[in-house]
Image 1 (cartoon, rainbow, N blue to C red):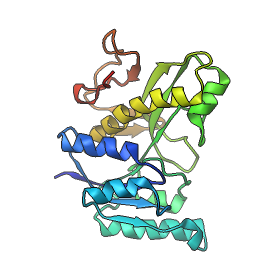
Image 2: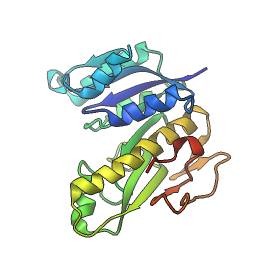
Image 3: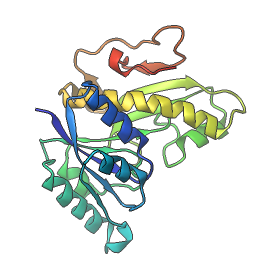
Image 4: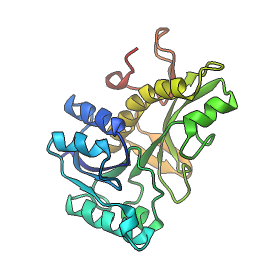
Length: 233
């Protein structure tokens, strides 16, 4: 039975789209049951509506506290069959910290994608901070969410060379292309029951060794991406 998913967005939802595309392709055994947002104009909601996926959005400012807003999200998500031990919650550009109460409702079942190689450059401007720092390698990370921003155990990371002086926008675009590969890959592993958290380490059962792919693919992903998730360049 496909794993039920709730996806939280605050913006365009391109990572939501990448996951939906891989579900359509048969690469992920999951079903997006609801898309939730704190912004009514988030384009990720429109992506969901075009596919007939239920949506829910309310400004968080309408609630008396972060806890009250998160409690309502938990209620809505639960109505769509996602609860502890049944399904997962994916953050796809959701620009709010989740409360401990929310995370307790979905233990070890909340994933996030971050546009930097954690633990470097946490926060809302990961790619821009990496470009400003002048790193030679940049990238993205999929991690389980805990109570600290961009801190939970890492599932998979991918790196690309950072070019001196290229600027944040160009670097972010190349990182985003890899986000669209590694996030669906992590979701596929989660849906297949292949992820196990041991302390700060995430084990991928029956995974392959890390690989750079072939010489025409200027990236490194670890664990290695499987064939259905390789980037198109």
